[in-house]
Length: 191
Image (cartoon, rainbow, N blue to C red):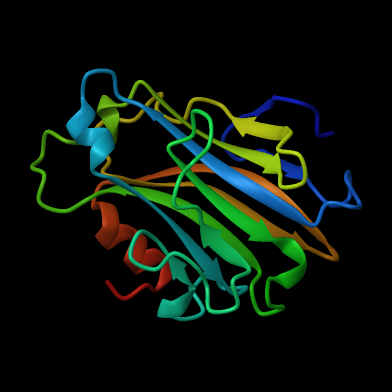
């Protein structure tokens, strides 16, 4: 059951459109806290991958990040300015997402060239949350995904995915020791 500020653990999922039948859009918000490690947070990239059933990105145009702010059909777009305490926000028009898209995965990675000391293990907090696009009410949020991280430089945070006729959200929290390269390998992205 979805409720305001319901906290979800890694691997947990929540029905979205089954619980809220009139839900037509969501905002995924990502929050980081690295304390005084501002170089780390300033160099974290949040990206969105629109994938088919095999969890491979449909095309390079279905990889949304700071250099490509939206999908060609505008169903998924990265907001240029995040509201509130989110570091990044991604708006998803659930009704406009093409049928070929089965998974919308949010990832983060440390931008290349920072050196080995800049890892996600230095984060104090890392969360992904889902808000109703209509009114901005928070539906669910992940637990603190920074706990247990050590030398990872990339992580799959969460995903919105189709389940039968409905949309669901799942917390992932899967870390990558090889950052962007690992994300690209697993999801079939050309970097």
